[in-house]
Amino acid sequence: MHWADVAAERLLERGDRHVISSGITPSGPIHVGSMREILTADAVTRAVRDKGGEAELVYVADTADPLRKVYPFLDKGYSKWVGHPLAEIPAPEGNGSYADYFLEPFFEALHDVGVTPRVVDNHVAYREGHFADCTRSAVESAEQVREILERVSGRQLPREWFPWTCRDNDGRLVNRHVTKCKWPWLEFENTEGETVRNNLAEGEGKLPWRLDWPAKWSWLGVTFEAFGKDHATKGGSFDTGKEIVEAIYGGSPPDHLVYEWIHLKGSGAMHSSTGVAVSAAEMLRIAPPEALRWLVLKPQPQRHIDFDPGLGVLNLVDDYDRAGQARF
Image (cartoon, rainbow, N blue to C red; front, side, top):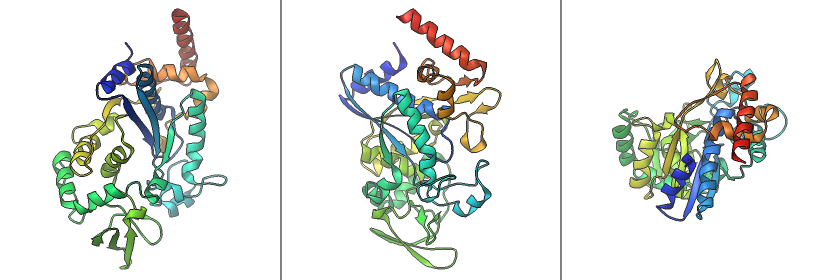
């Protein structure tokens, strides 16, 4: 039995209807390594449907996240955009946003591979109020949230920490001392000594990652998610998320599956920010979509994959053809 069937049977023991989630922060070219998450989620979605259940595949584009730094593939002029949400930064080339510039070719690659999720734009979701209930619960239970994060992660938070990443007057997302918070308004003092107000209900700012992730589980009703091993470490974001969604948001943590990285032969794990990557679009220019699915879905998720974009691609296609001949 394939590992996706095992995951599907486990889900169907809990109920017949499921929301299976995946997502990414589009900070750079979305590479083959990132395809492991969405293809894993898609495989479980298909397996649930094959067994008579209902399953919706949701892909969350974390466009509300800020640009962390000027990556090697960016012009130095992007330094002025560091800290701004990816949805509000201009694209490196052409029209549209920075986020769309990297998401559009990725979604085209997903279509070619046969993956058709419902896409949720995180920046839009904040502005439309989808995070409002969870945000209110978090800020009104700030001390309880702090206790959970410190206890589970084993790390002490700064004295002035508050469960909200504020939006400054210039549009940057910042962590500052919150002087007042009465729903839906928050006030903080910026580095210029100005008092800045954020409307939390309208998404002026965002939840920190360890609160943002379980908030998505809550308002989307997520019942299953696959994620990388970095989130699954003891005291990591999944451990804190489980407690936050239950104790603060009044929801339940999703069933899950942890996957290993895809390594680029001779270079290690793929990362867009370091340039060690082969984009999903590039992969599909040199190999058929079926081969990419085969690359990801053949091994157990807990095993890392070595990807060789040279001769290894030819061997991958041959391996897929032999398996197909043996099956049919």
